Length: 382
Image (tube, rainbow, N blue to C red; front, side, top):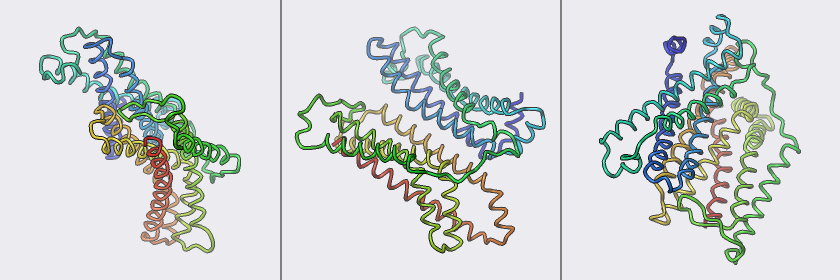
């Protein structure tokens, strides 16, 4: 009953977040039920491998649920204030947000299960019969156990993502300017240089004759172990360097005697580098992996696999949704600053221009890190 009362106060952003979570959970549930149907049809054809293929989209949905749940206190302070006035503490509020996320996942999973059962009732054609396990007995506990993973993982991620300090109004988390010292930058820089050296070593002439090549999944051919490990280390280094790169870009905008638009954009980007760095780093890595994979399939017709393609698109959609939710969270947290600047006489065009400059600078950093990651991935698959 409490969740129904909360749903009555949904705004467009809340409804969109709920529907996106339910849709992503429904797609992951469809992948899990497909693996179950294949296992029922042919038990000896690698059921564990099919379940492992469902792990990346499940992780993507859990991460999206965590980012969306973290944005609730900043986006709906009136709801948090009302719950606090009703006697709910930080732990209770975190549990309510996690339960709301789990309910959305349960709704999406239930719709998928209903469609799965309807199609098994002699509705699907012969082409879908192996995917649904038609003709084989379906244990009642099997789909329920599989589909319980989606709301359980998403709800747990949402509960762990909401900090206790941000759950109470008037007690925001301390927003200090991020500092990236030499020790903080030594690890990602070392990973990047080591990865570049290993990949160049793995791509040298005659490297194919050394050792046993690693066969990649999804029809991506094979590559040398040194090139694969080198790309993984370089991608991890670029992932960790995204937030410092955003902070440096913000400081560059503020160098010298900047105009008000450059000063606002630079200071804002530097202050939000830590919170914006992780989603943009994940987006750059996901874009690089997806674009490189599709380019490899396009250059070699007949090697594409439908299941990895669907999973790539699902993971990419979850990552893009998480970036948009984090951007909305940052915008909500900047409302007091924008209100103070407006009271001081700042023109709306100035604030809009600073936001555009900040977005363009962050996009440039994303293009550099993602482009380098994609180039290294293309070299490893060559």
